[in-house]
Image (tube, rainbow, N blue to C red; front, side):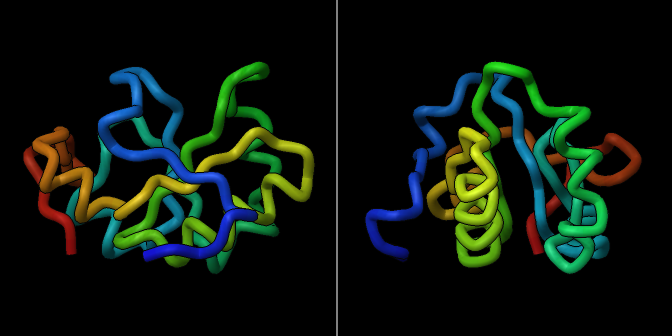
Length: 115
């Protein structure tokens, strides 16, 4: 799913195991399964909770934005780029993350699923 050259993207295989991940899916999606260690700020609450990202994000690192397939995360990544933040849309989202065999955990830290 291409969103044009203006939205920088990164493939799952290019992400380091310790990459900073911002998950912008809604609460029920997050609870079912997410990347361990990811920061969760739903897209619907993003502008109001923007300060949480600026506190948690690595000072000189990239913010890798993920959703289920890449649509919502592309919008948030573009917004972050416009704010001067080095943000990338994770190509294929959590569906690609799970398909690539990357670990998915639920909100209790147990093996999760992507919904």
